[in-house]
Amino acid sequence: MTKADIVSEIAKSTGIDKSTVLASVESLMSVVKRSLSEGDNVYLRGFGSFIVKTRAKKIARNISKNTSIVIPEHKIPAFKPAKVFLKNVAK
Image 1 (cartoon, rainbow, N blue to C red):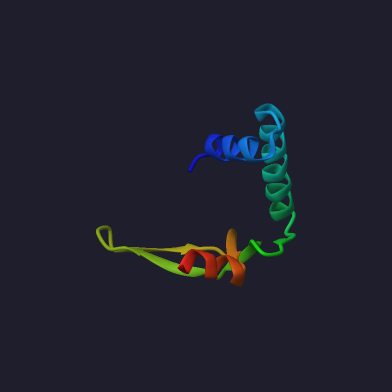
Image 2: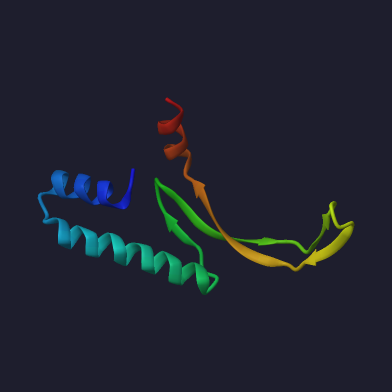
């Protein structure tokens, strides 16, 4: 399902025009991205949490060149679904 499909579904079920729904979806995504970039987690009860995880520093190897490089500690965005959401998917 694409963003356009999501906008169409929401517009059809709520009766709101697609341009307003698209603006709302875009706004939600920008708020989530901004919050995660600032290090804040986003919790949506009944859906899940968008969280920032920290990956530890590690050493990676390039086998073909027989070299090692150090990958520094870095942060990545992650999604943790709510229990209710997991139950609905598992049906």
